Amino acid sequence: MTYDPSNIFAKILRGEIPAHKVFEDNVALVMMDIFPQSRGHCLIISKAASRNLLDADPTVLSAIIPLVQRVAKAAKAATNADGVRLVQFNEALAGQTVFHLHFHVIPVYEGVALGDHGGGQADSVELAELAQQIAAHL
Ligand code: AMP
Image (cartoon, rainbow, N blue to C red):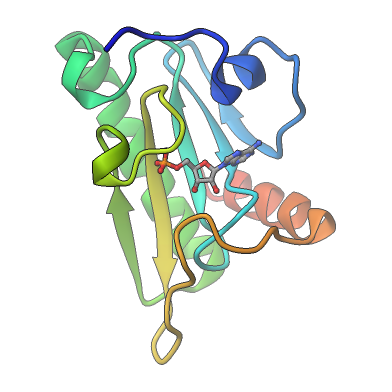
């Protein structure tokens, strides 16, 4: 399987499609998932092009994992969540729908079941607020 630069995250990285951005550096773009499984669900999108973890350059992974940790801590603090689930899918049968390397940070709350992967679209105003709140904790 080869990398296809017409995927939606590549379009977001090129500025062709808007996103609720939380943070950006030369390694990754962090943004809110528009079909969140919980309040504060965000994505760390690699700037380097690969389909997923399997074809990623290990040096890219070394650079991105500390950012994933930072975002997990910031999302937990900003949302007052009880825990954080970290998810990363590789290929369609494993649940991957966008074929550009990314990590999910999904805050988990006591007594609240996670929504479905790729469920309903979140309110844009709420996502913008959450993006700001998580950014403030980075
Ligand atoms: P997956 O490839 O299965 O890891 O999931 C891709 C994720 O991207 C899903 O959780 C979608 O809700 C999310 N998603 C798809 N399109 C967008 C978009 N335009 N902006 C933000 N998140 C998106």
